[in-house]
Every structure is written in C-alpha cells, then in structure tokens.
Amino acid sequence: MRTLRNKAPWVIVPIKALADAKQRLAAVLAPETRRRLMVAMLQDVLATLHQVADLGPVLVVTPDARVAELAQRCGVRVLREARGQGHSAAVAAGFAHARTHGAVQALTLPGDAPCVTCGEVEDLIDTGDRIAVPGVVMVPARDGDGTNALLVAPPGAFPPSFGPGSFARHRAEAEARGLDCRVLPLAGIGLDIDEPRDLRALLAFKRDDPNYAFLQHAASAEEIRP
Image 1 (cartoon, one colour):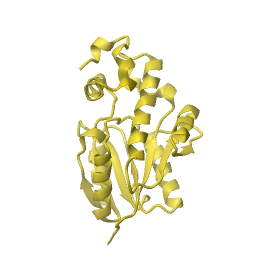
Image 2 (tube, helix red, strand yellow):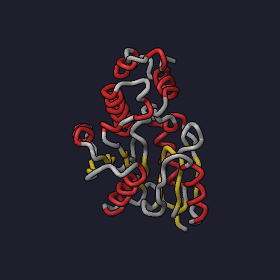
Image 3 (cartoon, helix red, strand yellow):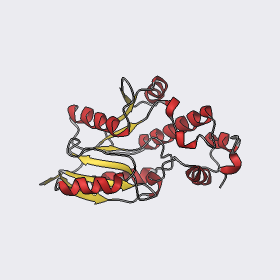
Image 4 (cartoon, one colour):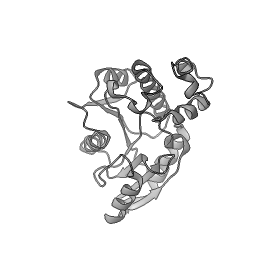
C-alpha cells in the first residue's frame, strides 16, 4: 500500500429535500421551523468549510432546488439528484463524481452538524494524509452508533452504509476489505441534530448566535431549552 501526502480532499455534503428535513423533531418543531433550522445548519457547515485551508471542492448533493440555490450562493458545487434516494446513495454519488473529476481523497460531512470547527476538519484531513491507500477515516456520532464523517482514499474504495448501527457496520466493512482504518472522535462533527436532546446541546453551543434565536421562540421551546 502507498501513502498519500498533501492531496486536498473533496468534501461531499448530502442534503435531503427540505420538505423531509428533521422528521424526528416533528414533536417539538413545526415544519417551517425544521426547514429553517436545516438551512441555518447547512450555512454554518459551509461557512466553516470555506475557512479550511488545503481543501478541495465542496460538493452539495441534493434533490432540493432551494438547497441547490443556497449552496451555489455560498460558492460551492452542486450535484442535483433527480429524487432523494437516501444518505448513503447521495454520498456514493458524490464520491463517484469526485473520483471522476480527479479526486484521490474525498470526505463526507453531514449538513446538520453546525458545531463542526475548522480545527476538526483539519484534524480529519491530517489523519487522511497519513493513512495508507486504500484507507478510511471514520468519525463516530456522539452516541457511538452512527457514523458522522468518512474520509476515503481513493473515493471508490469504500461503500458508505449510513443509518442505525453504521459505525460498527463501517468498521466491519473496512476490516473485511483490508483497509487502513482510523477512528477519530470529534465532538463538533459528532453532534448531528436529530433528536430534541440534540437541540438542547445545539442551543447551549449557539447560545449567543442570532441565527438560532428563532429556536428560542419555537412552539415547544420549553422542551428543547438547555
């Protein structure tokens, strides 16, 4: 196996249709509030990526016209899906697109992890620069069950399989394929906003951020306040 150095990875950010955003928050947030939250989180993620040096193109994969327009305004590339086929399919399409356009590494980050920091992305890239090829770096979700980020070299070396139990599933797949596999826990990337308890963590982190003030006035705010 060979080692990659200083190869700026593409970043794949899959976003489902806004009408389907954050269904697990339906008990505490109205549909329009959930859509507004998703847009705010995506803007935060893209703004953070914009500040990271030595990063390749950022590619948003989405079936949603509004998301595509927002991504383009933020200066990133867009791969439009004819229809949403799920997180794993969107990431696989993004990886394939990146590889077709010459990427030797690609990473995927969730658009609903607005607490991600530049330092975390840089740590992920640095770890990716030190893996043998083929190889993969995994960032587990905060609960240890899911996978919130994957960096794969080359982009076609590893099939993404997100959803419940994905972290154990991804590790088993990497072992079965004989890949160099690194696990990198990162608190900001690990916090994706899916459940009311995640909203409480988000509000604690973004306490003074005006872009999230609308959550304080949500109909069920008493259930999500930290």
